[in-house]
Length: 307
Image (cartoon, rainbow, N blue to C red; front, side, top):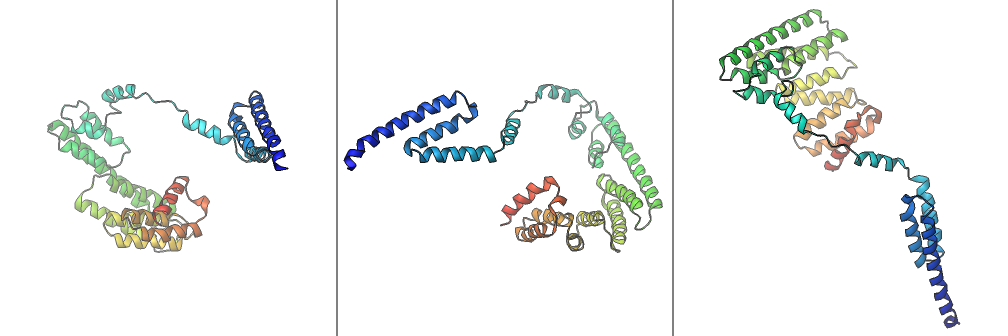
């Protein structure tokens, strides 16, 4: 009996395969080109598994259309389509424009004609570490450049001192607005690069005393502790810095700043054993909406490294 059914089954199998390929050819002419691959796949599977292949293929196609968003294709299209920036014109402009000339290069170049202008511009610039660039001018072989650099440094130092004194005169302990003003001046002054050795140390100690007084009483502002911990690190007192950041994780358990500062510190030390508990604590205590978008990826990557 099986022998009698064998040849008819083979014939039906071949006819079915031919029918599926003809059907797939006709469908490709009427459906969107994006679905041609799916139709071909269903036809091939159906040739090997008649009826089951058609059923499985159609169900898979319907599920794919239901759950896969076209937004993925749109996002991918936007990702791969970009305009190449022509940097050639920018390169020529950078060679001649005073605004685009790198400060370090210009101040180190003994033949550069814009040195003095660049130095004077530092008076009204908002860049950090102004002292670094002025020191380049002080070490220049051109006496006029040295004079401009020295004069500019004196002007900036005098300006910072006056601004700081004014802020301190208005400062009142535990007053939010006056604290923000005086802290801003201290932060900019210390990061200006204008202070050296004992002068820098004196301003740092003065600022540390102010921050320590501000943090003696409970406050909801984590920024005071961030300033204090960062200042301790700049002063080389790592133990106090870690104590400050750790206190933040205890006093402000649901805020991310303290955890981030500790992670940043231990990452610099490549101390993965100390990072893992911090990542776990963030996941438990810190609401996701409080974590900045740019930090999500960092935390995910650290989670893998801290295994």
